[in-house]
Image (cartoon, rainbow, N blue to C red; front, side, top):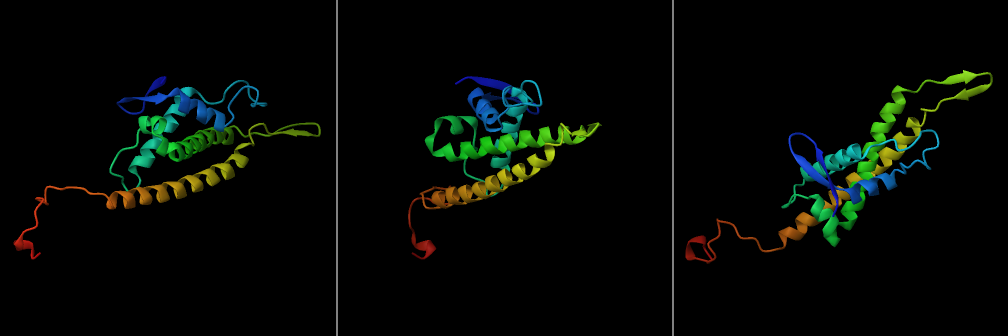
Length: 172
């Protein structure tokens, strides 16, 4: 698995290039699809940092799971395919939010004769798309985490409080 090490705070975390490419495909950030802009609008580093942010969001949002989701889970365990899709979509939405901020700051109309051009007005359209993706992600995340915790509640877990024996002191 090819990875790209990205520094998000003090540690460097490897982000699979396959995930970065999936986010780029999701937001259609290629030279042929960027008709107004030359080349790619978003760097691999930025997409990787967006992926790290979303995985951190997943791990830090209650209900907390018994495990920490990592890129290895997303890439190698089939049961996380739905999670991977939602994380890729939300990382794409985060990248689109960053792009829309840039476009909003540079949104200056240009008029020559009867022609009005606003090359950076695309940010208005992106906001609705981002909100839709975020709503889907938040809904999926809540349902998935509740289902995971319910599944874990029905499994056997041993604690240091249980000695493995039923005794008369407990009243049983």
